[in-house]
Image (tube, rainbow, N blue to C red):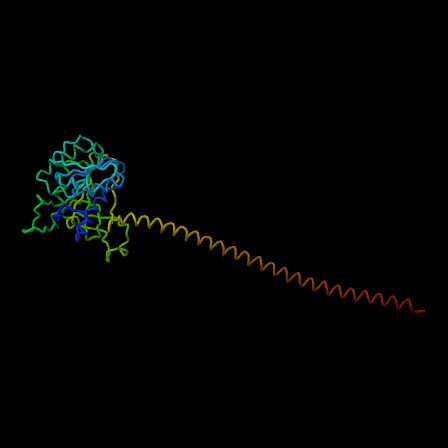
Length: 336
């Protein structure tokens, strides 16, 4: 299948950064798919559906309107519970309430009827389900077409426009911002009352001074200036799902998870260091006790030696006195 610059095809040379942008979103979505029934709407060449299946989903169905694309998917990606079929995202003809999780990355901007699409996704999503979708940010998107437009896109959306569509359909939504220039970071978004004060803030697990991209990783990003808009939509207001904090990704790895593993190891090292320090203090205290004991032993030994010397001198004195008495007694006997 030919790489056109829009639908990513694994192995395309010279576009690795584009692959990382795309696969990062699937890595992010993997947070939600454990043991879930998943639909990948607009699955493209299928690498993302495969990633979700490999990431622990119970089943994954990838759909795309292109028969050629689905044939490519079936030929190149096989995994237990993974299937592909041709279908229209506006009218899938799939059973209602069939999926726990639906993902639709970089599909929204291709649709002439976005409201119809959202209605279809809402129909397919079971109560308590989660719908994760993304789209380029119109405020920053730069197309490479002849007239500065992407011929494959119907239109791009600003953050406010994107929210407008979703807020009318879903009762609970968490918004995120993705910026490749932030080290492929995906950050939670927070909306303020001011329309111009829309910010994405992240709890960065990776310290900025350890950034693998040669510069500090920002702790905050403005949604209006990010590259991609991401939304995690819940079918019900009380949907039981934890929203991930900010994540950092690079070269196919979730660096936040790696850093959390590293933090665990550092904690173990810290605990061992604390234990070592405790034992060192115990050794020092024991050393002091032993030194005090040795000092006492030396003192007693000195006293013993002094008393032994005194006893020897006393014994010599007694012996001398005994000899003197014996000599005097003998002299007395010898006197007539």
